[in-house]
Length: 334
Image: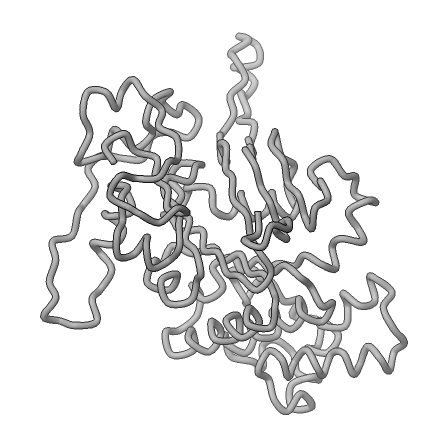
């Protein structure tokens, strides 16, 4: 819920997304049980207008599946998704169409997300044509405005170019412009700078920061805690399909409670070279997401694990060492 008592723009509760695993011919003949990858396994969070929430975690933790589930790009297996107070998890493709304009996504790879056959102007105008927005002249002006908003100025310099004539940073700005042209209220940024050079990352992230200041809600998917710490209002740390710690950015960064969060922070480079810490290298491998243990899923790799960790599946709750009411961690030790 929003702090003023009204509903948040996006409210996700107990979200579940699973992918079936093929049994093969032998498995079908021998009637082996059907298996599923538990990509998202009970995720809950909310996002207000003008707020940036960062979903953080290593590859395979379920961040992207969560984002795609929220946008109904993949079907969910359970849970509730409310957008602006409306339940959308059960809507049909036709019923979702009017909402598509209000929810947009920026993909990770700007080299794959743009069609090489389309000029920049045509790429950005296509969403307007699909949704039958405006006249041709009005669409042209909207394309220019979106390019300017994405930092490609003057727009006339880029509108007739092909993707291969642009740098990686410029391509990502075009991808952002293609999402902004419809005037969305929610923007999902799926690792928006991971494929870009360090020199251009700050520019792309600054655009998202400015859009957030203008009232756009941003759900940022990233594996980089330092990026999340600099730009996000709140951080939710994911591990094996579930959020294990969440709270205001400063509280999570300065007072991490879950052992997994502490391990992630321990390997983030410090600004001051005199501040040296000991990286916490997690032992073992991430458990198979098909056979997730019924107890604490982080237990096999946790440096703080005790016997009770193999009997309890911890829920998110406020740690004793934190006084912030919105700071929660899923660990029986805290």
